[in-house]
Image 1 (tube, rainbow, N blue to C red):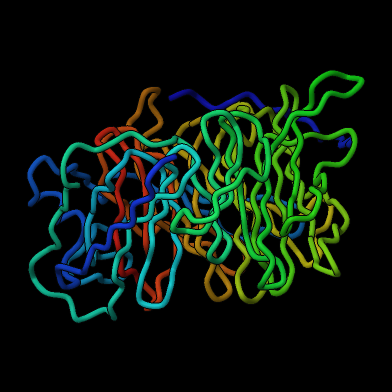
Image 2 (tube, rainbow, N blue to C red):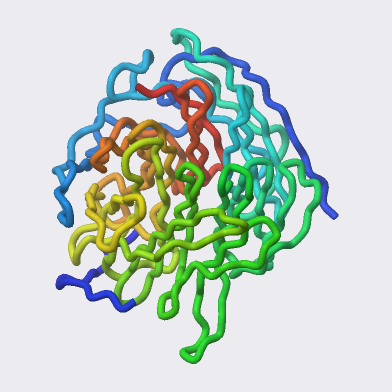
Amino acid sequence: MMTATPALSALWLVACGRSVTTKAIPETSDPSASASAAASSAPDAPSATPSAVPVPSSTSSSAGSASSVDAAPVAPRSVDGAAGSCRAVRGPVELPIRAPATFVVRGDRVDAVLDDDGRPRVVSFTAAPLASPLTSPPLREQAEGAQGRGSRLQCATAGEVAFCPDRAGAVHRSGLSGDGDRIVASGRIGTHVAASLLGGAHPALAYLASRKTSEGWVSEAWLEVDDDAPLRLSEDGSGATAVDLGARGATLVALTIDARAALTAMHARPVAYQNGARLGEDAVVFVGGPGDRQTAGTVALPASGPGWGLLPIARDVADFGLAIVRLDDPPRVDEPTVWSMYPNGLDPASVAVAARGAGAWVARIRPQAAEPGSARVLELGEVGPEGAFTARDLIPTADLPGDLNLALGPHGDLWLAWVDSTGSWVERLACR
């Protein structure tokens, strides 16, 4: 935990042979009370008191400006999923290895994909239609046997294809069952990868790699589609310390973060498919203060309206928050930004999104209070059509939650994954 990272106060000028296991887990309990009730009733379950925790939120801003609203308390979770709260439908469920999970939704089944040192390991859940809530909470489900230790990186998926980095930095491509495993890229050790389907049919992989230039070694973002030669996403003179991909119709948007000692730049670039990947113009949509090299952004592209790039970063020397950057089609230089402030600074601060309608669900880790060393909480909220973040609930976890992933289920439900001090967990939620 740290206080807010110093930021520039003036205007910024931009110059710039294992086994693969699939385990099916059937639905064992009906939708019912809140996860907080489940946590309090289960042995050794983490507890939370959401109603006592201040939650910052933001209103939308005019073009090129930023705004925020003072912290307001979150409504406590209720057994019936009343306004301002979510109810747990199932879980939390402990995963068999301690590793971040990526979700793949397939009809009435949701797969949690784990990285087992370059190979996907899949845990499957049924996702039956949501029933009326009952009075008893779902049970906390422990993994069978001792929990193994997997990679701290996530696999990325594109349709039925998984891209999983191993401990040496090689990126493996295989089916979700692990079939057809082969190395397709050599990335930076310890960095995350991103994937999506381009044009609805072509698996695309984005990753970071180091290249030696006249100025020394530079970390850059690269894009590989199908089996074609990779394309460099980073323009000359700029690098990349994080990358994400999002689908917008038949095209993709590649979001890269370039965190430096002096500033942090967010780049957005459209990618189309015309007999191969075709890169659109690179736009520096946001420039902020210095960022941690582990600072990562994520992209949310709703079905209608603008998209959003989300980046936890210092706004100035005293304040830290979530920068929610508008992404037009195509993205423009210096897009409007809305801020949702945190009580304190946190590097790195995990964020995950699940786009829906004209907005997106957001899961984020933030400090509980302004004091240095404050506990971290997992907060669930929404980004609306104008970019304003509205907090909806706090999800009970153990200490040090992080490595978030979020997906929209087949029945309007949410699937949330995280890693904390006790292991890796998945929870199914119904939220208003």
